[in-house]
Length: 54
View 1: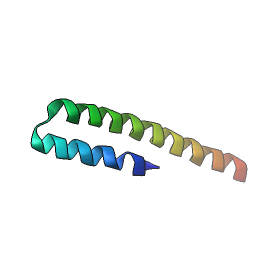
View 2 (view 1 turned 180 degrees about the vertical axis):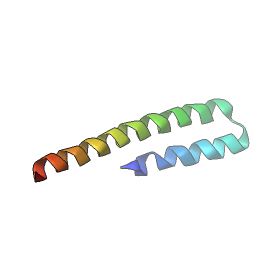
View 3 (view 1 turned 90 degrees about the vertical axis):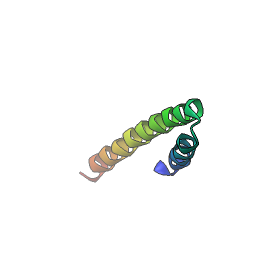
View 4 (view 1 turned 90 degrees about the horizontal axis):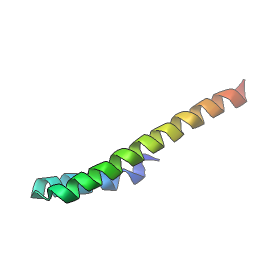
């Protein structure tokens, strides 16, 4: 699931190195949002699996 956030993180690091502040901050924001969404979905799937096995 987190594979989708990795490209945004890489782009953010590259743009930060080259000093493109606006682009880097935008990509970092997208990466953070996707990371939170996928983490919540992952936790929900763990809870869902736990309920079905009981």
